[in-house]
Image 1: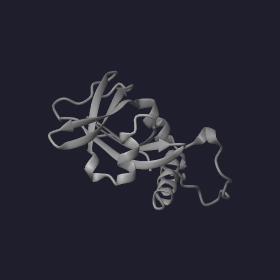
Image 2 (image 1 turned 30 degrees about the vertical axis):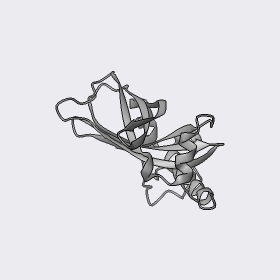
Image 3 (image 1 turned 90 degrees about the vertical axis):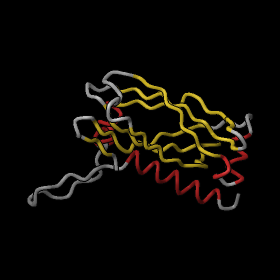
Image 4 (image 1 turned 60 degrees about the vertical axis):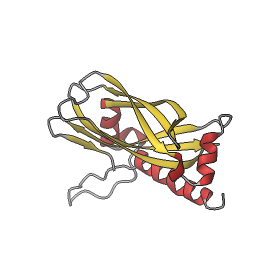
Length: 168
């Protein structure tokens, strides 16, 4: 548990940075530096990501296949755009008591022949073997009484036409 708190702080800081990082716009040499941009002018790519896609963790549970136990996370992905989506990447930060205790990258690549259609929703299951998690994290997931939350950190949308929205 001693290492869990520093790791959680670093992961939470990373997620906050991913979600609130403001892209610097190139400035003309004649213009002076400006102060920090107001919240209304946040990262344009993050705004575009959220305008085009909605990602929700709708269910979480434990499943077993033979001797292997898995954390099964079910996400609902909604394509709100007018284009087909080939890939969506995000990070899920699992939280307990408002602290991130596990950060998982979620790269979802749709089959080239069956991308996520425009204005469509799809549910996907992500399986994470519990034996690959440290004991403290595994015990948190195995305790059904704990109120585990999730933060979604936007990373990438790749449309079928090759265009991308990348949040840095």
